[in-house]
Length: 461
Ligand SMILES: [Zn+2]
Image (cartoon, rainbow, N blue to C red; front, top):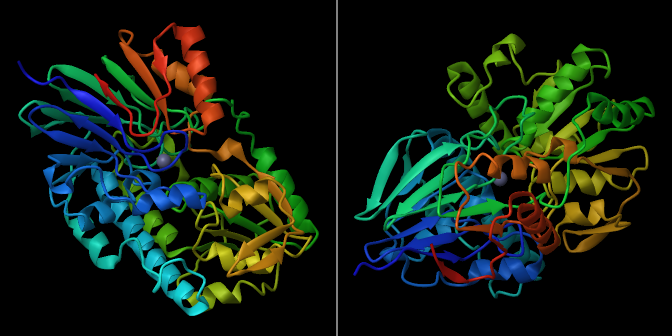
């Protein structure tokens, strides 16, 4: 008798980071996503734990998309001995290298900085992985177009479908030993200005769905919500700092700012994109707009010549240019990474801009508990950085309208597209209250068997 297909939850349970799911049969093992844990120290410590089982025994890895919490542990897996294929969509294969190299660079920099400041627990401080590991991981990426089925073991195959969350993001459909399990990855929303919405949910025995905003509904995206606070800040001579996820939020914010300047709702001011990763990703987004294809909205061509230029766009490349922005001669808007202010150039901008009450800090992305972004959102009056504290007197505003994630209604709407109910629906990738809220909603709205799995739990599909 053949071994039944099983599913093990190795990450993104009780939290929004560290996505890792293992599908096993008698013939092979497929790891769906290989994400890094971010946020508080206890979670980040899990990044240092070994992979459960020999990494070289995995038949393949498949990535839903290029965000760090879905692909960022790949270089570590490589360090643990993995050297097989890593399947992903063609645009993910272009964006993931940018993300992985940036992550390696940050790891190396942090270890180096901690060594100099002597505040690390490791002695000497170590990076989780380095550039060489990231490069090895990148060499394993194998692009697979949406809708094309790839065999990864004798009885396991994988098909990717469009998820509409960021460029290249995919819903992952896995057939294993006669069973089907579908992973939502991160799901986008109907109103994305650049990307088409997610494809319907294929029929499956098990569905694994994200719940980042499982307990919330987003406000409708109104231009004025962004325009009003920015206009107010600029008028009083302050500047605006937007910590943004480099890969998708930066292009989307630039499109929104462009529209506000075009309609006269915002004055034209210099807009600086200060993140090497954001600039590299912006190039890939430009390429995607030029090529079109199934992901890109057809009307995007109406925004020629450059959908991402609000008028006075400056691409900040060097560290010196970045530091000069700390003393701006006129009010400006700075978009910088990382999106949760856990690292990157945005941290030194925060150091200079947070103490000034004239300034505005806008947080457009989800802020994981334990990050500086979350502390800001929760009203912190001082922020810890570079081993000391910086006062926060600037205005701070969260901005869920610009989230790349589906909200509770979007998630239920997507689950409703299933041609038949799954045997079980597993809710992952959410803080406990969000996952629980979505679970209740799935139960009451759809009547499905729904479970919020535990970390490391294993189930038969
Ligand atoms: Zn994501």
